[in-house]
Amino acid sequence: MGSGQLPPGLHPDDEVVRELMLTPEGRAWLQWLTHNGITVEIGGASSHYETANDTIRLASDADPTSLIHEAVHAQQDINDERVDIRDSSREEYVDAQLDDGASPEEAKAAGREAIRELFVNGDYVPSGYEDSTYADFYGDQWDDANRWGRSGP
Image (cartoon, rainbow, N blue to C red; front, side, top):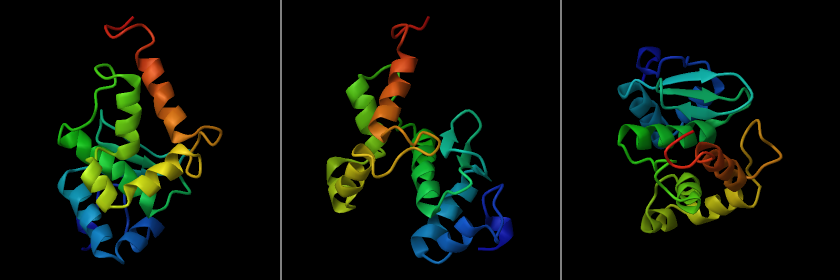
């Protein structure tokens, strides 16, 4: 995979690219991002995926797991598998965000339960929101989206 085959915004010398190129799974994610036209921008305080412009923004200190995590959100968006924040309960939304859309069988097989626990108990925190667990972070997103009711303000 040459630099012409990297997702827009990434360069072969980027640390995250060098690390992902070391494994078949990492190369597969880079190829998927490229094939689906997902732009990746490195820099800033937090990592997140923007559905409006198919862009992953990685924090300046993000590692390959952050890119893969955001790529899963991009994949869910493209495959229309994301839980709608306004058409779900708070618990459904938070669980879906924490589980990255994996079925219970897939989650168990991939060891996601252990990873999920790291997100829930605060071992992993949202970049830019270090005083919050992921469960609180996603719960706050749901609260903000539903503050005025399901039909909007």
